[in-house]
Length: 584
Image 1 (cartoon, rainbow, N blue to C red):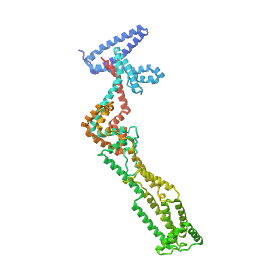
Image 2 (spheres, rainbow, N blue to C red):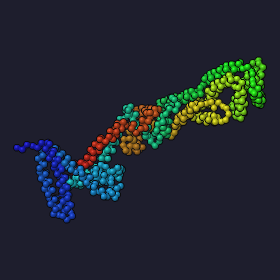
Image 3 (spheres, one colour):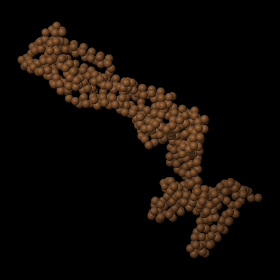
Image 4 (tube, rainbow, N blue to C red):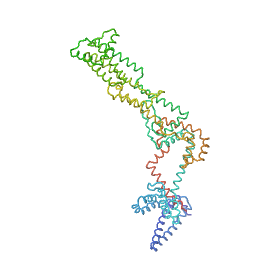
C-alpha cells in the first residue's frame, strides 16, 4: 500500500503545479497569437500541447489534494502568485513607448499596471482612482487568464474593483473607528482633553498659530489668544470668559498681569516715598558740601575773576534773582554781599534754579533756555572761585539724575479709574517723553535712562499683546454648548457635519444631551486650561497633538523597513485577489 503524501510534499507539489499552470497559460496565449497571424499549424500545436500537459499535471496533483487539500491547494495558489508577479511589469513595458510620448497620461497607468492597481504614480483623486482601476483590471485579467483563460474576465473585474473597494473599506473603517472614539471620549479626562485640543485646533485654522509667549513684563503671562493673535481663538476666549464658572480664572489672570505691569513701572519710576527719600538725601548731602565750601572760602579773588563776577551780575535776569537772594539773606539775619560773597552767589544760583523750574512747568522753553545759560555761566565762575564748591555742584547734579527721572515718570498719568494701565495712555506717555528728551533745553525727562524707557516700551508691548483678546467674532453656541454631542455628530462620518445641521441632527443632539450633557462643562474647563496656558495651547495647535497614538503610528510607519513591509503586503493582496477569486 502506497503511503499518503506528506504535508511538505503536498505543498511542494502544489507550488510546482501552480508555476506550471502559469507557464502553460503563457504557452497557450502564444499559440493563440500565432494562430491569429496565420501560423495556425504551430499555434494549434502549442495550444494542444499546453492543454495535454495541464491535464497531466492536474492528474498528478490529485493524490496530493486528496491527502492534504489545504496544503496542496495553498501551494498551488502560492505557485500561481509567484509566477504571475512579473505580469504587471511585463505588461507595463509594452506601454513604455507611449509613456515617452504622453508621460502625464500614460505613466500613471504604467505604475498602476505594475502594481496591480495599488499605485498610480502619485496621481490622486478621481483621475488616480481611474488609473488604478484600469491598471488593476488589466493585470488582474492577465494574471487570472494565465492560470485559466476562462477566468480572465472575472480576474479583470476583481482587479478593477479592488482599488475602489479598498479605498471605501478604509474610509468606512476610519469612520467606524472615529465613531467609537468619539462615543467614549467624553467620559474620561484624557478624552475630554483630546476633544478640547481638536476644538482649539480647528478654530485656529486659517489664522496665525505661532505662539509668542515671550516674557515682556516679568509676571505677566499672555493667554493663547493674546500669544497668537488668532481672531477665532480670541472669540473662544471671550465665550469662555462669559461662563460664570470659568470667568474667575480669566479675571485672576487679568489682575495678575495688571499687577505685574504696575510693579514693573514702580520698579522703574519708584514711588512717592522713594522719591522723598532721594530728595532728602540729595538736600542733606548738598547742604553739607556747600556749607563746607562756603565756610572755607577766603573771599580773595583775582582781578580777572572779580571782573567775570561783575559781568555776570550785570545780566538782566540776575536782578530778579538778586532780590530773591537778598530776601533770603534777610530772613537768615545776614547782609548779602554778592560782589565776592560765595554765599550770596550761591543764593542767586538757587534763585535761578527755582526760576528755571517755573519756566519749564509753564512750558516757557525760551525763557528756561536763557535762564539756564546765565546760570551755567554763574556756576562756571563760582567753580573757579572755589574748587570745593565745584565738587559740591557735581555731587548735586549726580544725585539729581534719579530724582529728576522719578519726578518725570511719576508725573505720567498711565492708569484708568480702576488703577489699570491702558495701552493708549502708555503709548501717549512714551511719545511725550521722547519729544521732551529730543527737545532743546533742560527738563526732567532728559534724566530718564534707556532702561526706564525700555520698561515703558515693554509695558506698552504687553498691553498691545493683551488687546488681541478683542479680535474676531464670538464663537458659535455649538462650541460652548453641547460640545460632546456636536463633536460626535460632526466627526463620526464624512457627512456628519452636514447631518448636524439638519432637523435629524437637532433631534440627535437633544437626545445625546441626556447621555453626554455632563461632559460639556469638563470639556470647557479643558479648553480654558489650554487658553490660559500658552504651552498647553501650543501643544493643542500642533498637528501631532491630535492623537498621540496616531502620531506614534505615523512615525513607525515612516520607518523604511516598516513602510516597505506594509506596502509590500498590501500590494501582494492586490495581486492575489484576482487569483483567489477565480480559484477552483
